[in-house]
Each structure stands twice: as structure tokens, then as C-alpha cells.
Picture 1 (spheres, one colour):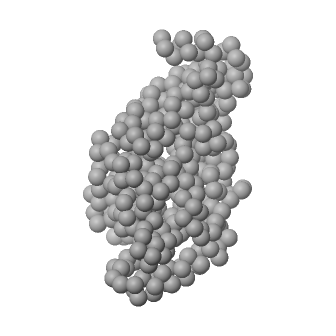
Picture 2 (cartoon, rainbow, N blue to C red):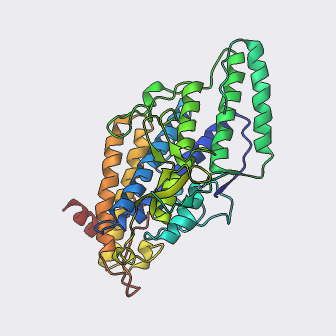
Picture 3 (tube, one colour):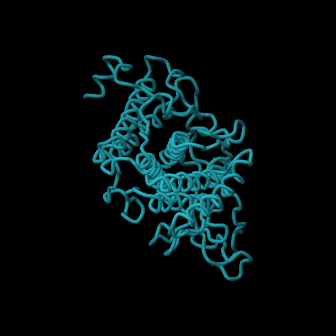
Length: 392
């Protein structure tokens, strides 16, 4: 599992920084997942591509939720700086050095097992076999209850603070507890930490249903939002599915970790009364045709291609569009929520540029094709020729 560096949250500013790290973490998973999905385009691996796409969409949802939480507590999400873009290969934002190196790579089952499942792994994953057959909420009432609840939550926070590293689920759990502690402290002073402008909340039913993406305006909605992120990513210690009654109501699909394990196992996850844990990978086949996946050189960089090559030009244009996506997201979460439509549209444009790259031979590596590198490229970084190509 991925481990995050523990941080002490003892002020509203520290809480805002922690949520900004969560924004960066959610974003950092998207390029590796997207690249694996892109490499399956125009092949018979449509079922795998569909599963990865479903995870990517939910990671975009989680990024949006994290930004809503940050806006709700008076912060301002930052997504349009070069430092926001991770270095691949490398650790995830906030990650413990050496715990996991995340690459940009074509799809493979090894990538799913050794990277994607490690990113999404819960603290105590359910040991589900390949089948051979088909936090408590407390109602706040009065100041006495507030003081008692605050003391109880501080003990829970202290237990997490004493851990050297945290899983992603524990990290979100820590944020959830500290949201509650700081809000109780504020309420005892007849104020609130939820001072953000409600107009900055992003809600868009074109892309995300209202039971998943909703305004974060108070403690209850913030806790509900965090629960949804953890539920979709990890499931629970006893249930790998997102089911009716869970935070993502109406869904009946595995959490991310188990969706990736479906891909690795090659079978859909099903309830199975004969299995020890009540579930097995015994459903419909999820086939994989490795020979159809383009042989993309791992961890491409624009600088690795000769400046006169088509791969260099295409890589620069991909990265310019990727940077535009980040700029659109930054504007979306900083007072222009309707620009989410532009941002999501940019994600689809990225696919076209990625497929162009994967159709080009890598100029420096015979037998390989080029690939997307996810680097920050502003308009002023493009040449006249590149701008002409972009506008043609």
C-alpha cells in the first residue's frame, strides 16, 4: 500500500495545506491511469479500458470533492503551477520516499498489480480468491457535549499523529477528524471554519450525479464527501462493493482496489457463498490481448525526442493541452464552476493527442512508440510552428 508522510494538523492553515496535498494526490493518479487506458484504445481490450475509465472518472470526482472541501474552509485550490505536476517516475505527492515509484507506462497486468493496486490498497484488503465457478457520527447538542466530543476526537487524532506514516484512507480519516475538532472549537466560540464562498462550490450533474458531487458547506457535508472518497477508493474491511446504502448510493461496483484486482485476475468480482470471505473472482471473463497494446517506451519526456521530430512536436502539443486542462480546473475551483465543462472536454482532447503519439515511432528507441509525458507547457513555451499546428 502507498504510505503518506504524517503531518501535524494544529491550525486551520495546516488543515488547508493538508487538503491541498489531497488535491495533488488525487490528480497525480490520473496521468498513469489515463496512459494505461489510452494504450488500450483501438484494441479488443475494451472491457479493461472501460474499468480503468470508470476509475479515472471517479478520481476526477475525488479531486473535485477535495477542492470543494478546501473552498468550504476558506482555502483556494492551486492547480495551475508547474510544481503541481508530479515528476514521473516518482513518488506520489505526500508519499513516503521509496514507498512506491509511479511510472507513466503502457497497460500491463504487472503495472496493475505492482502500481495501481498498491496506490488503491486499503489498510486491510479482503483476501478474495479466483473462483472456479460462476467513523461514528455524533449529534452535536450543547456545549457540554461539544467539549466531550472534542476531547474524544483529539484522542483519535493523537493516535493517528503517533503513527509514523499513514495510508491514504487514514490520511483522509485524519483530515475528517481534524475538520471536526476545529469546527467544534469554532462553534464553542460561536463561529465556524466553513467560511468559504458557497458560489465556489462545484456541482455539475452533466458529469457527476448529485448523490456523489454536492456542495460542501458544513461539517456534515464535508464528512459525507470524505466518506465517499474512501468508500469508492478502498471499500470497507468486509465489503469490496460500493452498494446501495453506501456513500455512493445506487452503485453496485467494486471499489477501485478490487476493480483493478478484477483486471489482474481476469474475472469479474461476485458474491460467492462458497468462498471463505463471501466473494470470489468467478464472474464473466475480462480478457486481455497483450499483443495489441502499442509498445510505448516507459516514462517518455519531450526532451528525449529530437527537436525536429514529429514525436517532439506531438509531445509538446499534448503537454500544452494537458496544461490547459490544469488551467481550466484551476479556474473551475476558483470562482468559475461552469468551466468544469471545458476541463472535462479537454480530457477527451488529450486522448486524441495521446493516440497520435502512440502511433509514432520513438526516434531514439527502435521497436518502441512515443507516448505522453505530462509536463507543464505554457503557450509562451511553444514555437511559431507549434502554434501554427495547434491552430490548423
